[in-house]
Length: 362
Image 1 (tube, rainbow, N blue to C red):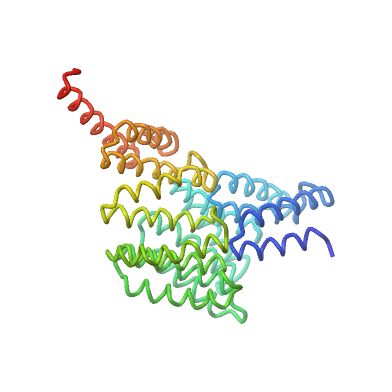
Image 2: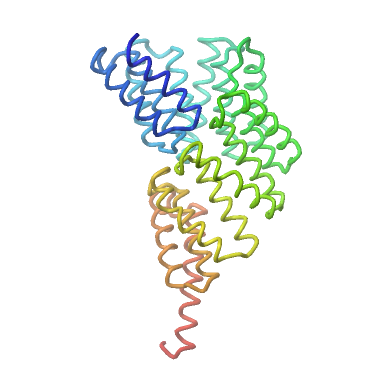
């Protein structure tokens, strides 16, 4: 058997287990083998680049994902023209990347193009079409178009569920995402029902699958949003060690769980403990998401806020400046998050000036 095939299949299993770093190394080895054997511009080489792009999305490395997808798209277009199942898939995945980078109009356009092409080159009842519908649903959810997202989630999930051999991880992930839409509508009971179904499906996958671990964090998130901060904290202190043991400390949902733990402590006004949790996360977020990712900026911003409450104004200034620099660079000066950074820095400087005057230094 072709060694690259073995590497790709093993990488898929490791991805399902949430071992993203291992999966990435395996796919890169497979890419090198296929590039040497078949050439850079071969269909099977492009297929691995598409797999690497999907993995990069899981790792929240969206610019890497976009690069892989552009490379694959050039190959597919040269080989097959403008209409092909592989091109439909790439357009759809590229739409998700644009969504995660805040490029909403491009995200919708690409996902719609991918979905419409899937309907032409497959059928409406194809799992490929269902997956494209779920990707467009994700874009609508991020844009706040919740009703449209629900329609597409239900459409895609219905098709996946009707398959002779259903893709369990795709269905469970779809339940997770639809549950988050319900949370945005304050439909907590509906969200819990879906997450419970996702958790059951996850139990049918290999132990400690990535989707099952994600569901466990989402269930805690629901409890947190419902105001059950003590329960959420207790659950997180049980869940997080399991996730670290199963997937490693840099698993994205470990990071999300740690951010959620900070939020529970913050809202319980245990600011020193909250600071201790969040202070460990900038370096990890830099590794997992990237040093200039907006969510890394959010960690710096949170540190600035909690340091202000702890009366560590000089340290708060450092964190707020870091957050502002990233937000200006990645989101622009008029984005609501950037404006929030301006407001907090302005208030911080106002408090510093007040204290200097009280001390007779101004």
